[in-house]
Image 1: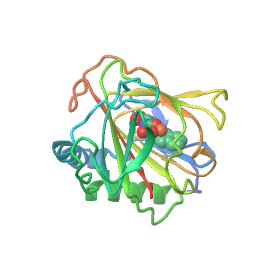
Image 2: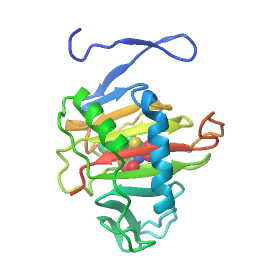
Image 3: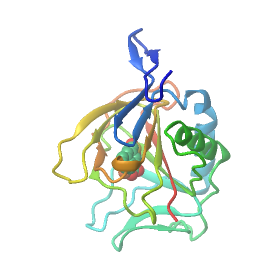
Image 4: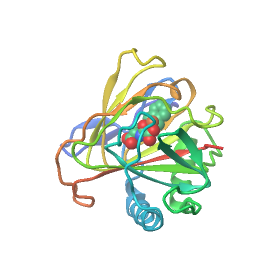
Length: 221
Ligand code: MD3
Ligand code: FE
């Protein structure tokens, strides 16, 4: 099959939906790609959160974020009144962030390779936890040293509506439903596009209950 072609996949309702969708230049959605490894990923998230618990951080403007976050890897993304940055220590403990789990590395490398980025070696993972009502307003990811590396995102638990805009904040946004096991590789021309998550709807996921967990695997340093 030609590169970029779509394979049909049956969804919950027996409908056919594309398993891989190149929905913007440089962006590849891989529906269900993380499903075979979901248990290993979630066990690793639990182990990370035992060392570096989820916490709601404060923006430079003084707002407490509605999503709770933690990190693993050689650097973690943090925000406080001083600004946004990557730092090697968890500010709550003063200790290094937990190691990047092998299951995270393997998934990121495999997904990035599918999207045409062989040998992707992430050094940081921001883990976001949403409960119903939590959201992430439209933003760009540009705290990484070299934005020519892609970002691999993994959705687990409750579904969310993802907003995908353009390089300018005022560009029109598309809405994309992201569900348990969906993986997106963001590279190339999409890497600096604005994006966000609408307020999570109430629900109960069989494995995660009232939660959505999102992993973003990055090359930060
Ligand atoms: C598009 N997380 O952590 S993942 C973030 O679901 C973040 O928690 C959201 O945005 C979440 O920064 C969205 C999808 C995503 C991640 C990184 C991107 C989309 C992106 C970087 C560039 C363009
Ligand atoms: Fe982001």
